[in-house]
Length: 257
Image (cartoon, rainbow, N blue to C red; front, side, top):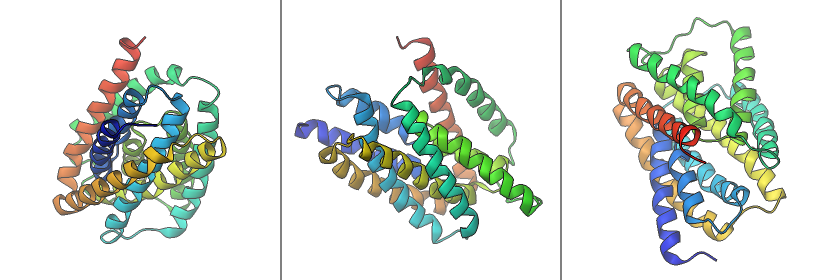
């Protein structure tokens, strides 16, 4: 059982995570450490599995807000979503068997490159570029789904931000359009992981449900703010989240035993 004070704290972090994640991803940087710290009596897989429920809810509410503003290629999203679901399921299955710590130095280096590139390229994500051939777009979409779907299931934190980066850097979307499509794929990756953890009986529903409500409210408010403020605001927020992700992985690599 979880006491009321702990549950209130978890819901507060879930709300903040939903708010941040709705703007540009990265909510797991807030929610995951909070869950691991506040629920030390439970196995890590149980905590991670339970946190996937509020992550899914917040992303769903945020996606609903974005879809009111942004047009989506539903055929592309269906293919990407199915692949991302399977990849995340596989990633979570691997996570339940081995440690993911060996991947963190690699991700740390990649994030440095992402931060530097986004900061120096002022026009990055400010406009949609439509010069990619449909055949190439399809191939790129599959690669994004496989790689980042697996990443979300196996490692997790920063997956939403990586999806945004991929949609901008590879498919040529602006931040608003990239954020919308990233939310839809993130729904699939979360659902893939949730399916695995439910099959393993690793969900604390008494914690997951109230956190899901809080994360959902944060997702609605964050998405509305992002839509109102536009691409320039989202770019700045993206840089902040990438920097926070860098600090998180840097701590795990250099200081955590």
